[in-house]
Image (cartoon, rainbow, N blue to C red; front, side, top):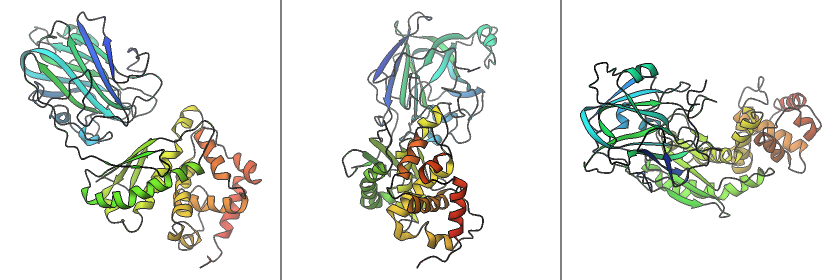
Length: 458
């Protein structure tokens, strides 16, 4: 059973503001602010929800994990009341979230003594389904003889001195709901009540995959008549450049890798701007419009780079050593992922095979953008042991296979676009190859492999 199935989704997507009136709880109202992906506010400023505070009652409170597992990739509970907010959308270490694939959990907040609570505000930020918030808020003075500080079941909540204050569900209908959220719970009488303890019973936003647990950035408890100072967000503006045709806005964030700022602005940005319309032209499909914005974030991390939707995250530690070699090409590869947008096809029908998902970007990179690098051509292949190579070897190997097929069987230069369209629309199957080339995929594979044993032209 979906643990969040009892919550009703809003009827329409949230834009700048939304008022949710909870009729189950007299006087309580919940205001929701939402900045969609690409329109986020560095300081979480919303029209109808106060910005995060750095000196509210939760700042010195004790946060306890009552149930559920914290994700090891995220921050600890202190991230929820440290008076700081993330500076980017996908920053696991700056948020608290429950472990992937789990059904959320409960967090208790002990304010130390009973206080007159004016507002409870929660904030989250993620570019996809981990942005919206789904939870129940309970409160207790803790004075009940039968008070249960760490209730494990709904029955214990009911009998252990806890009062249900509000139900929150900010998921918009019709999309993944990515972006920045602020929720403010208050009472039209001006005070929610006099409480020492709060309990957040948090559910995932979806269970169709393992990544539905929200990235919570901050939890504020605003005491009646208490002053508030905004939370700290140290923001360095990203470099913005338009694609060569003016269609797409490309944002490059080097705030956490300032040593790469000049390279990003002088070399990377112009290359991405020049090649975006070229990539789009190579990969059309019916009814598809390429993203009009995408972001590149350079920061220390693992691996080389990864793309999710319209966000590219690149490991600045690796790029720093490759500025005159593979750095720009690696991000041209990721730019192709931005244009591919195969996610919609995966949800509708058939998942695109990994060898095409990664082979197409490397084909465009090594055979179109930088063929002089010999990064995947016959020269590169001759320096590898090719006996066990196969068309689905991913990356450069699959790119070499695609180049062979396109060179020998695609005189009108339509194959790449047709294969891409099938992947994007969730219609890909191996039966596509006889239709495009007159030969089965296995036969093309054998033919291509036979050529790998021949000496490369110098």
